[in-house]
Length: 486
Image (cartoon, rainbow, N blue to C red):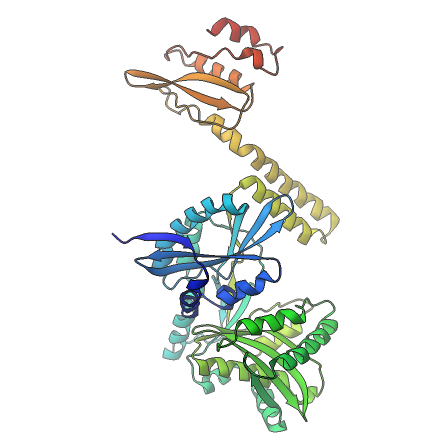
């Protein structure tokens, strides 16, 4: 039988960790070791959890922890966990869930929210049944394989309807030849790419080890701020974050800074990321100068071809936000064609249901409070109702578990914390074993005694004389207790 173990990996495992993420169809830069180190500078604590079978990783999850007022830590797994085969996920996930449930006590988190790259196929722009199309669907099918979400749900992960990373995705299959990729683009996009080349737009790539990288990152940040002003509040990182990112990836081919210039002036830049399976360009900025030379189209195309050259199998346009104030940005990406997939977003594993409901309500209230007042109040009542229900669910269910549904057997189980104790019999064939159970609410004695009284065939149940400690000494059933207790 194969040996399965789960553990927290440390710095000496970095190379093996990155190699595992590098070749995973579900892996990307957000699960690479260096990304966790970058998040440290932003107040997060990374935990790298590995499920190991016969000495080899079969599942990896970089959990990021951050303190949340009154609720301990928030645990987030961006674009993870990572695995290579669905069979490995099915085998490893129960062990992972058990491990992080125990780990939650040490690191004080009430819920783990994962965000794996899985979703539903929205549309594919190549729907004919040519061999090339079938190959394309096979290369991207792992992103929308329904068995993956079934495995997560089977292991008690819940779809929250929320997301941290973009859920509307657009992908290229980079196994296709360059001309085929170009044919996916809209007619105007193909024209703009060729026009930029004809006009003399120059594309330059800078790696993390390039001598000019710090200077170029400063120029990039200036363009990002211009883009932010133009988009009216578009959130951006600070300059030191970009500098730190490139420092962490020195000596690798996972990161590039692309520059598009015209007449010696920089007009567009982006940061492109890639591993052996995945690639993207999710940081970019421009100054809107020389718009007639169509530089944004050429720099995107150069990033795609560079990823293909490095051996990546997919290009991820990262996120699109159709039907919004950023629709123009999405239209640019959609003009390249590709395959649309909508991710499920955050999947939650509530470890402490009460704290999780508080967290879920707080996040929902923050994001939904801008809706119409009447709708917000109505939905708030529903959310608060769910929260109150969770507060009592645990205690209520444990009291009910005291009695088995069978009329001839009473099963006693340890309930929640309490100030009163009762001795009741655990009735088994030919033997009665007294057992101490705890009841949180003293009035539960009424329910227990009444239940026993209804079962005429049961032996006498002995109730401990703790009546002096009952909070409600004037309860109308008090004389009944005194009469029937020994």
